[in-house]
Image (cartoon, rainbow, N blue to C red; front, top):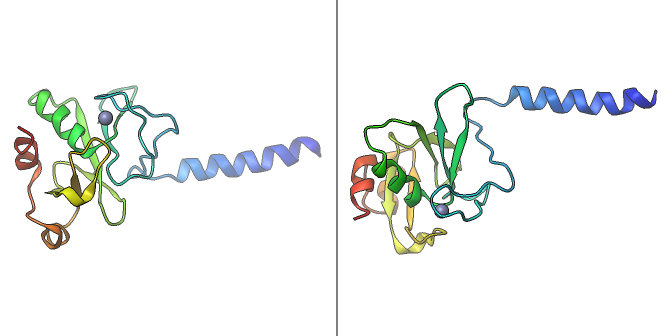
Length: 141
Ligand SMILES: [Zn+2]
């Protein structure tokens, strides 16, 4: 009886974990940014990841959208994996190369790159001048 009371919640936990779809990129509590070593805030709209392709399927976290863009710029042509950012409004994980970016001082991102990502161009347009992935990378001169 005692074993069952432990086992059942455990099975529920496993079922919940298994149901997590590919778009769910929850970061571990102590994830540190690969660019600056700063702790990443898991529910921040500026937290971003690089999903490394390969058998280990590791995820490299970034504390700031700007840091992901710098990393992408530095590794251009190497295609180390899929870059993911979060939609500024609903925190949905989106493909960084398909996202629209707006740079504005009001965003106050952790490393002060102050760039927010949006899934829809229309949402980005309401916030400022939208940039695509390449333009956002080039804006970090
Ligand atoms: Zn960082």
